[in-house]
Image 1 (cartoon, one colour):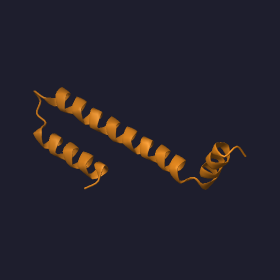
Image 2 (image 1 turned 90 degrees about the horizontal axis):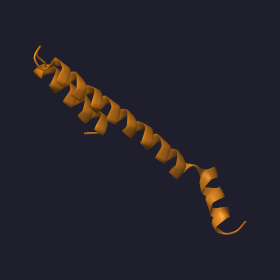
Image 3 (image 1 turned 120 degrees about the horizontal axis):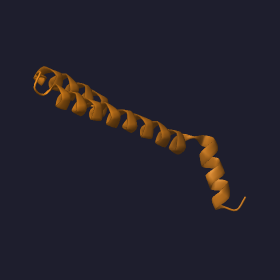
Image 4 (image 1 turned 90 degrees about the vertical axis):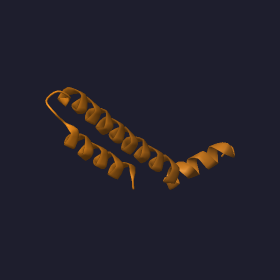
Length: 67
C-alpha cells in the first residue's frame, strides 16, 4: 500500500469516527495527514528530478572531474 493509499485509508477511517464532540480534533488530524502527504509528494518529485535528470547528472560529473 503506497503512502497516498495509506493516507486516504486513514482519512476515511477518521471520518467514520467523527462526532460533534471530536469534530475539531478529527479535522485537525486530517489536515496534518493531508499536509504531510503533500510534503511527501513534493519531496519525492524534487528528489526524482534531481536523481534522474541526465543533464543534472552530467553537470555533476563534469564538476567532479574538473571539466
